Image (cartoon, rainbow, N blue to C red):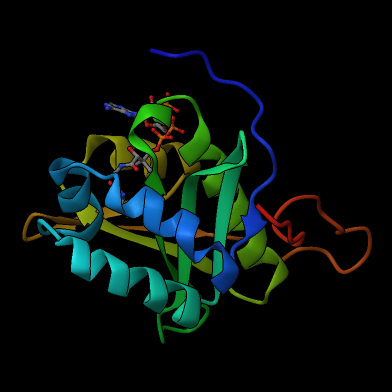
Length: 173
Ligand SMILES: CC(C)(COP(=O)(O)OP(=O)(O)OC[C@H]1O[C@@H](n2cnc3c(N)ncnc32)[C@H](O)[C@@H]1OP(=O)(O)O)[C@@H](O)C(=O)NCCC(=O)NCCS
């Protein structure tokens, strides 16, 4: 396993970051596509997804290392009171080094700072990295029909002195 290190703060991704997002998505192998999208997604569908994510997510946060996007978290309002659905993705060669954990922290910070109350993650029961990531963050995990639903409650940020580093900042790749 590669050693963990301190990663740069997650930055908000915008439409101008789409080429980097597309590079990361199209580089995914079949297993990663299944893990992320629950099916062997085609390149065309991944291209569509990159546009959809940047247009529809309430926040897309990415970790940029060596001027390239190494991982991202997409947050979508679920329609369930204050619950935000999160989807994580880390570039294959950068996994198991704490990037996913750093993205989880960024997602929690965004939720706390933006009046939401919980992060929900839905993934295949066979997805052990995601199980570890969710349980390590303290999520309550339920299993139903081979799918796991992990809910992580997040305390709201305090009004005074709650300025954070990281997710609130935008940065050009
Ligand atoms: C899930 C994913 C985002 C995790 O990213 P990551 O950068 O590897 O995560 P981290 O390095 O922070 O590791 C998080 C935890 O998972 C564990 N983990 C990571 N890869 C693992 C593996 N292959 N097997 C078992 N545990 C694993 C780590 O040990 C760590 O647990 P710990 O804190 O108890 O030590 C990444 O594996 C990925 O992109 N997978 C494909 C897409 C996907 O499944 N997305 C989820 C859809 S919601």
